[in-house]
Length: 161
Image (cartoon, rainbow, N blue to C red; front, side):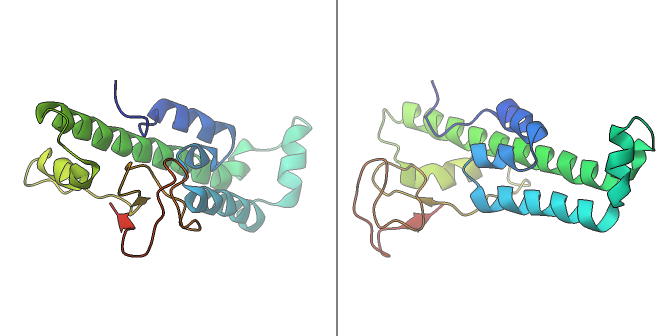
């Protein structure tokens, strides 16, 4: 079984279809989820006439008037899916490395694993996340300890992947 950090891409996409940004919240990408939600609201305010939604709810009108909001929603779902898929791949590579080295493979080596698991022509892009140096789980930047293993953190012990 893969590590607990692994998230299901299909679930992130499904949640994103329920509400713009919800798939990112599932992935614990709070700012990104709020950004997508704000983008959907902005598209609605800027590009959709106020009477368009009322007309559609009454059974008339052109559904194409909601296209800007739908485009932002679809892009959000795709982004959540790709993020979850990337995280899932990194987690599985780390688990395979850990198994191959008899458990000696630590969380500090995950970046190298993700880079060496791909071909040399392909680049791996990841968003910087702070992880606990002790347990390897994602950290809340506002806390000075790991909420998972309670390790005390300082600026020197924090690291990003």
